[in-house]
Length: 405
Image (cartoon, rainbow, N blue to C red):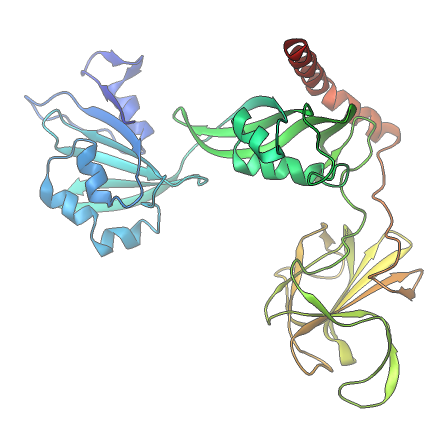
């Protein structure tokens, strides 16, 4: 549904002076032609299959030539895809439909494109919009499936996916859900001029499964990194990912094998993952870069150190992630390089090693260590940070139980 605001010069519309409304669009102040003094501000999202010109006409533009020009390839190219369905279109026109300015903000973006007429032609400029962060809280009860309950609660898909990922190690959502399980989630939503543009991070969440309470709170460490922990400070993150590639297949395991190039039998002290050239390779745990460069048969090679005990190694890379160097800190899941066939390789694949006290272990079968829980002053700081969020979650669950009972 389109929203329209008419603002009379010298008065206010929705408590906002005319000049302020137009500046919100990212446009300069304009001079209203005499006899046509009432600019109308209309907003709506671009509809599927709708051209930009058609959307402008729907929101009050009467100039057919400008509407046609707005749908031209030149303007569309300048908008860089921002005129796609779902983008927020704001149009300022005179009462008779002459264009003052229009702005387009794509969903999930903080960049707004401004369209203005000049001597019968349209000009496009861009600016970064200021987003307002608000905190939302939603909750629900499982009746059939997790996502059905989240849909019924009005949770955005991105929040639902993050929630299932955070609790994925504690709850098997395919087999362990029960009717009557409950959840609450506190999360960020970013707004621009009163319209939700995108969701942010989950700040806190609680899931009661089979009577057992599971909690998750976002904690910012002193170094700026963020992770989720339960109310006791135990991490929701795995200590190590089992695989450094999101989608791949094992082409050679941890065993004795005949070398594909030299033909002799030798110990294969890692696992090879077949994947297309250029596939992103991710760090399997938080760590520090111990080595990055070329190393004999490994080709382009990266070694990460994870504390005093563990190291992981990644070979045959086509290239390294930009800015990666010895001493760099990397986060679990962060891209460190790309699959290639450098060194002694017959085709694109990743050679991955997992070492404990410099002794090679089978990455597919080794018991992976858990992430370290919070302790000492860090745990105390964490509890202080989450106190108000924990109270809100508890109150939400208690009120929901009272309602159910």
